[in-house]
Image (cartoon, rainbow over all chains, first blue to last red; front, side, top):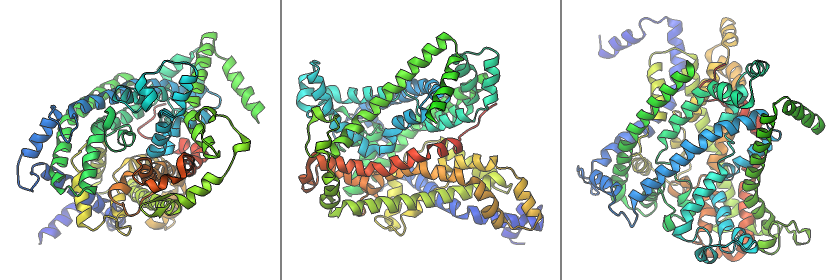
Length: 322
Length: 298
């Protein structure tokens, strides 16, 4: 018997002809997705890992990886201070995921279950996402510009603006650009307009809330002791996904800085995309290895954070369960 | 209709204690503030796009005597990036969005259906792989992916670029897995007893039940794809979409395009965003009802 026949008998021997026919249908269904994954995920990741252990000329070497860690530790790279970018990325992640998102659990609940006009409010709050990075950033750039409406109104109301803002707008100088974007992120992120969370709150059976109300449960107890625990598994799933994006989200820094990272508008997400653009559009094939090595260095940093985060979330899920 | 909405809202509001009512009023003010903050810049741009002159101090005022469609007309006649007009970029946005969503959602649907509804050798491994891919970030693949696309001749090639978009092991599959799990097996079992084959069960019984969720996912994916400038910049630079065209325009690397000035620029932003905002605003209910990730207790 050939190896193939032995393997086939071992794997499928215990199944009836009807089930085998079913398997044929299933494997037909998954054939394309699996082959696509093998080529565009498995092969690409393996080849990315191998590239990380090569130098710019394609020889096996640890130099690219060493360079990546040196850059993360503070060595200037293409005129960027990547260590500073690392700090900014962590700050942005903390602001978005540890401050705004938990506030959003409450505000989203109130908006979904107890607010008149919730569809209108949610559509307004979804606008940045709907307009997309390019359009939203273009609008905000115009809004913050020296001849834009924010400067004009501030002057009309006699608000004392720094000279740099009057001359170059809010995003025109390093001293105000990043802070302006972070203030914008905070102010625009308070509403909790997330659709997936709202959908989850909507699916919690109404009877649960009605029973709680009959028992004299108030608004905040309803939120913290019923609604949020009910959707907790979903919150954990979302938080795990967010953990993976620790260094990938760049809050449109690439767009705000017109692809230059200037005036302090940069982050790790910006830097990785910037290198990728250099590889693709400036034909810098010598950067293939460095780009992969930098990604590998970020993976090495992120993995323990993801595992610790998952462990903490599991523990929290257990305590909510009990 | 509005009278009933307000009546019901007041009834629910009055049922709360004084403290809770004060809190709800505070939350209402917060949401109002958020709505104003989000709408203000957008309203400013849209309002200015339909005016015949630019004045920052009067940009919030609706001045009917200055109202004009001239800027919208200019967008379609003068706006050019890399030799391509606005309409051409609009068409590029359209075909990339439709193709991406079709191949991505179809591929995810097939995998999610197989994983959620059948037991077969290798199922647990594939499900584990789906979780692994979604939760373990490997960030060294960007350049390798580009290198592969170059070697497969996929760069600037609409006939093959979709192969990279047809990824099934993604968020869409994760959500559809939950959807297929939630569909009762009674109908498909009955159909199986009546002699229906697996394809008939899939296309006539399961798909119609899962269709609202698939449609909701397609709608949520539209926003991301329509506004995606990175794919155009890196993989399809000869087929610039609206997002990439506007990015180039904003950076002033195409000075000829600026001959239309700020008003035309604002009108181009309005035209680019309008389709997605309309689609989202009309399908919010569909998305809310049909998309869930993770579990819900209760």
